[in-house]
Amino acid sequence: MPPAAGPAAPEPAQSGEVRGSTTRERILDIALDLFIRRGYAETSLREIAAELGFSKAALYYHFESKQDILLALHMRVHGLTDGILPMLQAEADASDVWERLLDRLIGLALQNRRVIELHIRNQEAIAEMHRGASLEKHGPLRHDVDQYVLGLLSDPSLPVEGRVRRTASLGVIAAVLLAASAFADVPDVELEPALRTVVHDVIGGPAEGSAT
Amino acid sequence: MPPAAGPAAPEPAQSGEVRGSTTRERILDIALDLFIRRGYAETSLREIAAELGFSKAALYYHFESKQDILLALHMRVHGLTDGILPMLQAEADASDVWERLLDRLIGLALQNRRVIELHIRNQEAIAEMHRGASLEKHGPLRHDVDQYVLGLLSDPSLPVEGRVRRTASLGVIAAVLLAASAFADVPDVELEPALRTVVHDVIGGPAEGSAT
DNA sequence: GTCTATATAGGGATAGAC
DNA sequence: GTCTATCCCTATATAGAC
Image (cartoon, rainbow over all chains, first blue to last red; front, side):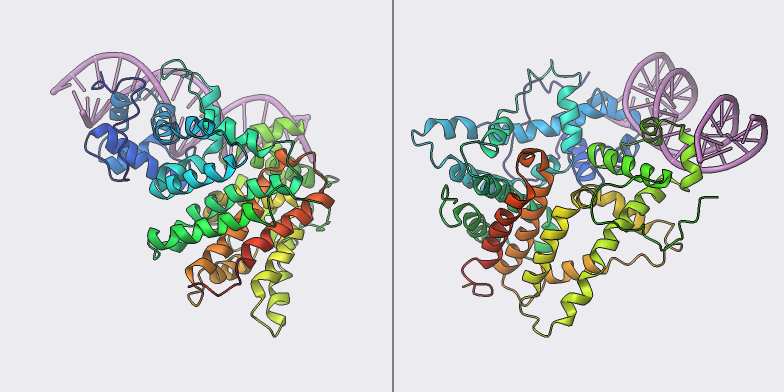
């Protein structure tokens, strides 16, 4: 039986990206890497095991299934984003929710690139996992933030251009994040302000909510 | 033997999105749909055949392999983008290449959403196809435009913010395109100007090439 | 041009030894 | 905790009938 990585315990949740002490974490790190590079569906347990240096069957000591590995990685994202929602709703002024959301997202994305990358690619796999079986173990598996964001994206009180701007701002963050190799030479201290500026230009535009 | 869809003949290349006269084209249409919705790797030939109403093996009369189907779809994109490169290089003034490129890309993307969607998702599958075998039949399989774009993206003479802006502008287009369902109620005549405005704000910024 | 039947490979997952 | 061996299933692809 696996050590005791309790159900709803989403990993010690370090901020950085370096992990890998326990075997369970080493598996997750390798899997994360492969899921990003080759995609969830295209990555076989055999590959993961090979990279780790032991056999396929050994994985099943640590995880019940392949989906279970994805789930564990997915929980890392939840650990990061869970704090956001209450914070947004706490503020009385709801007019700048989107700006405040983006603020958090950018910092979060840059500090946890890998997991966010996993989340951006492999959306289908994650969605299917949500629909799928193993929902009971880890609780109802809320993805409140996603829901909340989707709500803001299709806010019918916004003019079309406003909706485009919101969609676009997420696209900007995703694009820069996925183009990691292109910005390999750029340190975060330089990349982050540039990204913030551009995202600001996207939502700012002429002035939000002023479409003909 | 398949009708006579010669190697380098990339389909009659209609502008619209409605096709489906010959069986070969019907297969491609169904495959395109499934590859987008479920992903290339996750889509089986059995599914494609089922949707078409005949058996799996029949597909092999029209295409040599699954990759061959993807390749044929990929050629549709090439047919669209092939004209761009000469046009860009024709102009003497090279300072606004990126703006002109984006201009073309936006129109092209909106008028051929499906194929472009396929190209955005399934990048890995397409990349692997390029590396893979069947390269000889259709010629060296140039992807000049991709190469050219990548070159512009990492242009070392640009300040970091400029590179971020270029990457971001592509991200904006991709995001809006992939969010098709969110903009289902918006007609293109309304969506296109909004998209152009936002993309313009992204590249425009304070003024390209003026980063502290 | 489409079918059934089959070959072959690889996937996820389990059993039981060590 | 990791191994080997194996089961079962589905995938791509082929052979040959119609």
